[in-house]
Length: 247
Image (cartoon, rainbow, N blue to C red; front, side, top):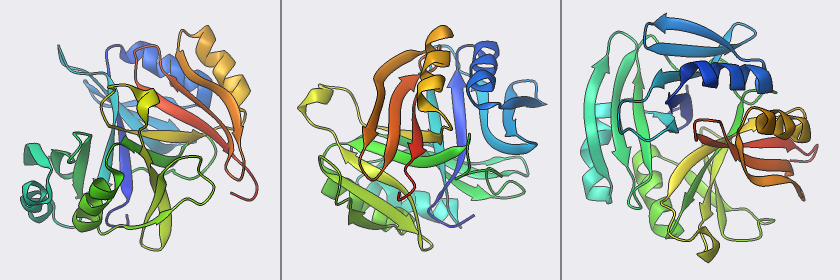
């Protein structure tokens, strides 16, 4: 996995049975129990994400992991860059080594040093994660943090209606940074992702039938594709995107 790139997507959920059914219905993900309290979601036998039961009081959310070559070295620089290490670094068996971190605006993410688990086996294909996105404030400062920590290059998105920076590493675009305006109110900064939907409108109908919450109904973004924003029935937010042919 490319250093600095998103590599693993992990759901902290209040109801794994509900989550399994929801993501199986929308995307055809099957669930494989690797441990009594850990589920790996697969698509055609390849890992696309994972889930675990949220602890009492833990926020339901999707966690995004970013690959690093040396998690201890990376974590040691976080405070000086304006972020905070909230847990770790620590080993996860033979799978790898990790640290839980927040950026200067408080958005949480995970640094992952691969062992036997480099990351997901399916990404950038239909019904798998296509794009990751940070909704944040003070985008210039935040971009500098990730540039220094993860080696990103950033560039403005010319067609975005607001301030939006695309980040890349290893010669590939992986996601974006979205400036939160007044319409977001006091919602904290957060990481999320887009799943490559083969039919955004159908997925939204399925999500509503399963008691998912819709934050933005399907709409077309010129040069990007058809999008929608939602959460699963337990409250974990993510987005859908059918990319346009030119995107």
